[in-house]
Length: 343
Image (cartoon, rainbow, N blue to C red):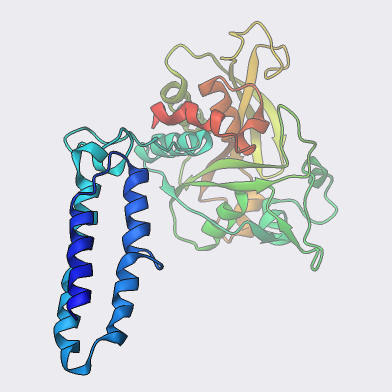
């Protein structure tokens, strides 16, 4: 017991005089005295040589020695001489925190929210529907019976297990589902993702996003449609934008039209986005065909309505000066970071 006491006192003097100037020396101290093969572990092993009558006293002595070494190790970690630049002990809690990078919404999401907010100000509610749809809601109810040549206007992805089901080619399927509810009048917009089997290029993609609108009530006219869309374009692109309507054909509207706006990319001089014309078509529209109303059990002699549909990617390209639609789906963080400031 006396021999153990002398050893501990000698070790205390050695340990008490130890000093460290960097992390490496502190780690050397830990390994030498507190490691699995360190001095403290070795001293603890001396308990087996102590007489039974003295084991209690020796245990207290060894525990005090272990606590002494641990306190010395903690003081070395906190000592001013060990505070090197970059170590955990040099943190100044009065300094501001490290800046965290801001996330950003996708430009398609930004444009979708912008379009929706404009039409909500006109009293349009939001409706959504399934992306995998049956033939009736995607084609048949929209005045496109089987083998109708107008079905060739849209190259469709069919579900292999059941060809009666398709990936919807437009969000018009939501219009049909809303009309089938029979709750009139209807004033709704339908945003969502759609799919068409098209060649991927700078101007087109096999999947994209749409917002369609539907307004059905008594005495709705084409003039109501034009004024609604004029309001939308002026709010979206500014008062100076030029607009034109061109007669067109859609099986589910009659009369039908396409709406163009002056190209913001080239200023009207011609580019790959506007096909060198200076104009970009942003939506199709028209008065809801009486056959569509009848298919949804709405009396076409009492009710009329208009419908319109637009892709979201193309207005986003015009708004933000993007010249390739493929950028939207390439997940390039460098591209997405550009829209942090437009949240």
